[in-house]
Length: 237
Image (cartoon, rainbow, N blue to C red; front, side):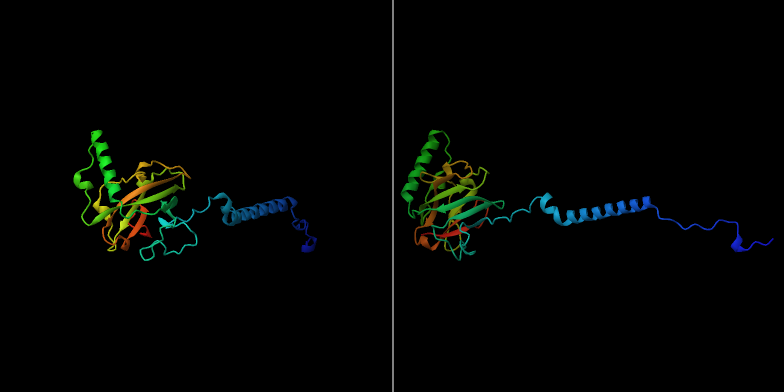
């Protein structure tokens, strides 16, 4: 007997039916992928501002005027500041001292010579003669001047002002008179007599320097970090 295809005894092919369990698995996998993408976006754009430390503050310049509205050129050789100007001195990019110069005594030679004699006598009595005669002799053509300097600490570094700060006279030819002296004391109260300052503490002490005997007003005072060759300039008077 011939069997036609229509009358085949084989069972008809079955149509595949959807698997509900598989659908759930696909949905769960899709959800996990979506959550992972959201997490990546959050990590890239949202969370850094909360989880990462804030960017470092912009470093302060070594010296600048304390007033925020002061001209950028104030305190330069071309635009020296008035003596009444307060300034900020920074160390390693962080503000450390607020500094103000008082009224200088442009010829304080007698007081300075007396301070030198007293210091020499104290050193000799202690058996520690630290100054040679030539170290303390007044160079020809110069006079001693003293400038009161008020220093306020702005941080917790416990800095020592007379070690961190240089106050000097710059002559009209651009040369400092610092090279002519080898010591750092002045008539009392000397700035070098003060030790460390805590945040918010202030001291006022004298700094001595050599000025030309003739026309010292032609030069400028300069306040700078002790290790910096340039600083903030002031008129002499």
